[in-house]
Length: 450
View 1 (cartoon, rainbow, N blue to C red):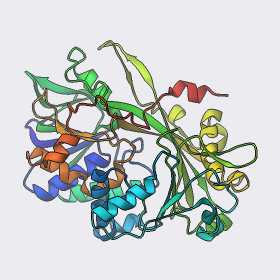
View 2: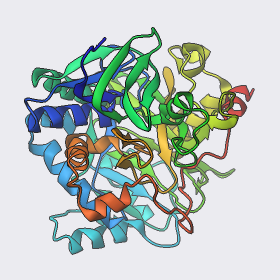
View 3: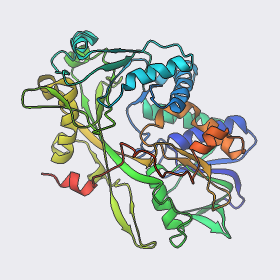
View 4: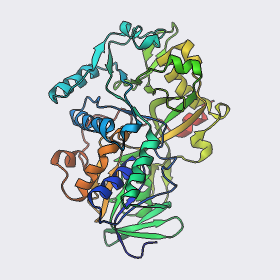
């Protein structure tokens, strides 16, 4: 326990928390900083704990395109991060009302960025990338976007290295589960653990991702002004990995990141009765890791809505019990989740090749999903000394090298106006388009599918 308050207490050691701890240690070396999470770092149930994640600047949104270019440069050049970055290139296929690929290229031009991205037709796809997509029919896709400068990073290893660098810079890491925040007269003074220990701080920063809504409700069930409300939903996607054979490693050794991103139908490629490719759901295939694993992600989310009895509200909470969140054997994977991943594998790689890429393991990746896909990096307007730095919305991880810079600016009252408006707690969400990843399904329905 801390008898005297520290300067900064960061709750959550995922991508936001680790980056914040690192940048605080670099910019405020005399400050006392504590980073607290429920397990030794990196936390294995965090969204950031993954074998790999895509790293890209390929955004139709100019704001995040600009930030993506900045973070991509850090991944390429910063000694802390570059050892974990792999420039594999990235394919994106969309089937929306406008060309996302062309919009991204226009953004690069507007930002005067050096780029090698291109758009080409579906037939050309068969002859690209050493023919690994030759047997998948993309005839229903209008065009394909490819950026050879994008890639992926070794996710858990990069977060671990960032946390170690923060600790080397003077940050104290504490392993503990938080039950609630400590409040007194509208001021957050610290946290209480599930074991009853208390830690006090002048500033408490929540980087709690999918757990944010529950933590705020647990802290003050009768104070809805403190709660997350509709701002952050605990949402999950399923991720599977297969151990590739030596033959498969040779076949897919130069495979790029492959993203199916249909903003209209929330779709990814599946096959019709003739074996042709159709956009009906979302997903990704990631290149082979140094440990000879290939990962697949089904980018259609679900939630886990429960009754929060103390507040009387219904909120989504992560399901992280081992028997309902991670499966280490193919025979244990629920059929409903296996079908989710099969749509991705067979849709991207075709029926024949897809049949040879069966998952060995599967896990649920829970993240804090915001309504407008923007993060929250902001003071809490109704609680002094409480700050929010979370809401990655399944795209925040790639910004690991720079997220903490913005959090420090926010803490110092120096966040630029555009960022301050984007990431404010009380942003007006009326009239904004629905987040394409907003969950319409419940976990219980997916797992129960026979």
